[in-house]
Image 1 (cartoon, protein in one colour):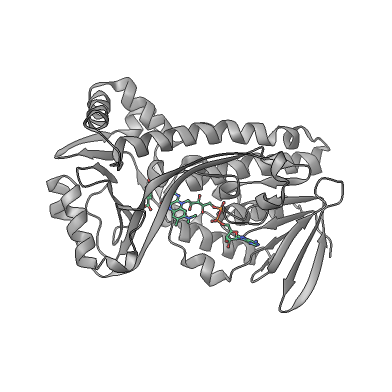
Image 2 (tube, helix red, strand yellow):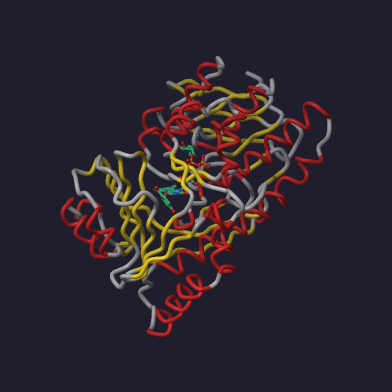
Length: 390
Ligand code: RFL
Ligand code: PHB
């Protein structure tokens, strides 16, 4: 087999790149180790920056998003019983975010790819990227017991944090930067109307909580739990009880409990691998970096990587220029580190750390009060939350 670009991983990064390349007439194959149903069953992010929305439009996969996506002009930060609204629209000269689940983004990209007549090879085993430091990369894999090889010009490593691409790079060629937080988020999805019209992030003595949503009828809630907790030990009652104790009273009174459709714990981590290019292998999305979900940046960073990578590949094939490919890692990392900073900052402001002293808690409170009192401070939060320019 031969193609122009082999994409490893059919999460949002891989599907988005595949769809953009197909529409630009660039031949590509996507290899995914899981089944389509498994990929669709992962409940993850929910807040899209405008840059991601624009990219989905360019990929021809935004019809349902335009119909069902919820445009949000602000969000609130609760601190004990106090609450402060960040007016995203007012503080950023009109910018907003769109609440639309990652599951829906993935489903829309899957059907767009299917309609374009391109397929994804699901349940591909032992995928291995090879010879990417020379001019002729090869990707081998097994499917239904048979071995295959695809020759290509470039490999896009869109295979997430646990994928094979980053691990295929000689370790001396990589610099890794990491912080693992001593807690996770226990998330619950429930078919009940959201507690508030906008998202509510809360710092409480009992730990962080977040009230989010997927639609006017479906809510997504999170509470901070210690790294050793197990989702099975949290009944629905216990979860909603804890959530209500962590958010301001007016919000707590509006939380409607219900039977969880999904309940899982996500660990929190900050991670960056540098560089994001090795010869003809390009890393994008979670394969190269992870942010704690507090700033709602994970999926949006995947989108900005794909923006840069797609532009660079199109430039290569259409204009015969490799300038974009040469600049890819540096451009992507410049934006990644700013989102890492914002996500780390939001995490520090809103969570309870096991080692946190009275001084640390006063610092969080002072930070919150500064935010409430200073337009400059809330403008900084707003411009990061809606997404820094590409
Ligand atoms: P993904 O979505 O992990 O997709 C990677 C795909 O690659 C496949 N794969 C392989 N395929 C072939 N061969 C191999 N050897 C392979 N190894 C892996 C995987 O099966 C998978 O289908 O990465 P991508 O596309 O870069 O997208 C990134 C986003 O998914 C991610 O940034 C966000 O979901 C992060 N994230 C969250 N972000 C938010 O903004 N808000 C959230 O609330 C939020 N919650 C989460 C999250 C990530 C989580 N992870 C990674 C465990 C909750 C969780 C649990
Ligand atoms: C979500 O709705 O899943 C969500 C929203 C905002 C975040 C993280 C997750 O910061």
